[in-house]
Structures are given as C-alpha cells and as structure tokens.
Image (cartoon, rainbow, N blue to C red; front, side, top):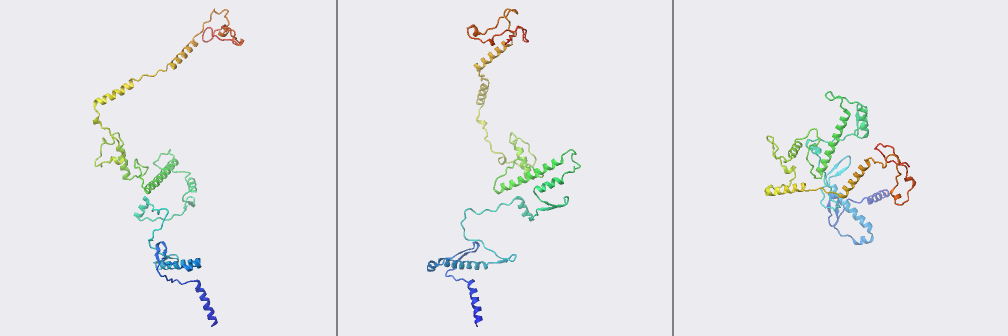
Length: 350
C-alpha cells in the first residue's frame, strides 16, 4: 500500500505541472481565428489582482490561450513533412496599420503568356556542363564572359557573308542589341506596373515587330508631313487615322478674318523696316582708322634728305631747339647710304 501511495503522489505532482485543457468561463470568449485573436469580456477578480497581480495575470493569459488553441484544433488539419498544419480562415477584425497593405505586383507579359499556355517555371542551376571546355561553367557572371572569350578565339565566316567583315564586331553588336531589347522590356514592365503610358512613336529595334508596332509606325510617318497627312495618298482598304491620338492639337490661324488690305499694309511695313534701316556710323572709330591709315602711308613713302649727299646736318630733336636738355645717346650721325626702301633711309647710328 505504501508503494501505491508513493506512485500516486508522483503522478499527482506530474499532473500539477500540466493543467487540464478544459477551461470554463462565465461568458464565452469572442474569437477571430484568422488573426489568432481572443477577446475576454469577463469581469476581473479585483481581490486576486491586488494581492498577487503577476500570478493572476499569468493564469488568466494561460486559460485564454488554451481556449484559443482548442478552437484552432477544431479547424481542418493537414500533415506536411511530419508537421500538423491548420488552415486558418480569413480574419474579421481590422487591425490598425501605419501604412496600407502592399498590393500584388501586376504580371509581366511573359508571366501572362506563361499562365495562358500553362508553362511552369523550372528552377535552374547556377552551373552548366560545357562539352567544349569539359567542366562545369557558371550560367552568368564574369567567369562566364572569360570562358566565352577563350572559346571564341576563332569565328567561322558564313558562306553568304563578306569575307572581309569583322565577325567579332558583328557578334558584339548583336549582344548590345539583345541587352538593349531586354532593358526596353524591363522598362516597359515598370511603366505598366505604375500605369504610365509608354510613347509609341517610332519602331523599336525588334527583329520581328508585331502588326500593332508596324501600324503605329506607319501612322506616325503619314502624319509627319507639313500638311499633317492631309494630302497623302491613301492605300486601298486603309482605315482612317485618328490624328488626335498621335498629333497634339495646334492653334490654327483663321484666314477668313484677314482682309487683303490688312495683309498688304503689314507686308509693306516689314519691307520698309528692312530697307529703311541705316547703318550706325561711329565717328570716333572711323576717324581713328583714317589717321592710322594716313600714318602707315606716310611711313611707307621714302624721305628726301635736305642739302644733298654732302654735309648733312645732325638731326636735333625739338626739345633741343626749345632749349631743353638732350642726352648724347639720342643725337648721332645720320647714315647717308641707300636703304632698301629708297634714298635716305633715315637710320641713325648710336
């Protein structure tokens, strides 16, 4: 009997740790299982709250959590990879948020096409086996570019191509076109996601343009004349072009209100304004140029010596004549030899 009592005491102590899953409440809780929310409207026991606040709140939180878990176990359950999963319903309580919920991104053209055709996206590995190099090569990156350069050290010239054409430059140009095309597609998807209208003028660099692109290109070309396509010949079975969709409206001049007399007077005013303009003469500038030209012509003329070749007098400056001081360095003998410019070159020896 003593042994049985000991075993029973041990079991009772173990059961004290794990409380029962059945919890009774005077008023049932309000549940929003989609948001994992339980609202308890029962009155609080003020005596227990004042005497032992923390213990009382712990017991209350444990009981309410147990009731919420009991409700979750009543939902349809699934087992995924040895884990039991419950399917939560849609929440009914609107919880406050700082910002609105993010909207799902709109599908790109390729994603829409894949959904229509039932194409499933397969996960690609980062490495690919290359038969030429006989090793695993990265699918993209700088190592991939280095291996491509090593592989393409020689390029075969096609039979119908020009033998003097640079095949390496041709390949690089094709790659640039492909990159620009991908960038154009990326920008178009961004514009579509943000509801921005993409300009349709011109024809993008596409190998096989669609019929819509060709029609827009022809419409733009037709309207790009001086008369905005008014006098362009039309093809058979051609649809009418909506010019407002392509060309912006321009303010037209009403010629009916302009009379012939008004037009004549306005034209005469323009002609009189052009012909009646007189060139402005700067007298100071003109006088200065005239003096400069006169001085230049005087310098070019040969100077005639007074008194012939014999016994020329020393040239004395005007300061000496008036009684001023003259340095000896400035007064010298005159060279009477012929210069290249004529007789009496007027050189002074110092």
